[in-house]
Image (cartoon, rainbow, N blue to C red; front, side, top):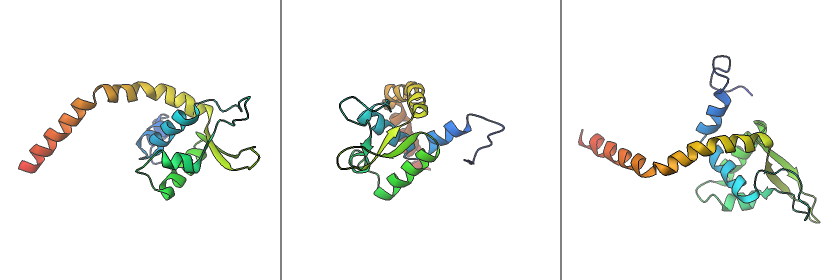
Length: 135
């Protein structure tokens, strides 16, 4: 899929796009929390996925339209699999692909760093806002 960044210059460009897309990382993290990174059907009949409605309820600030578009984008990037579950009442579910599991494992260090330095980041933002308002 063609992106905004120059892939020939920087082969990490797709990863930068995933990280900069407003809801993509949040959706991937919620999916990881809900169903883990294992895409293999579990022995108890649980197919390891999450339904749209459950995912939607887990992200209060997102609209249904934006969530649907984000899932479509992530599916097109090979990070999410959309499938029909094999339960008695089949329904559409989503699960993380191995590429997403690898990505989330690597990005976890950046997320951890952000959590560790959250107070400093917020202080810097508040200080900048105060200085900007004085001008």
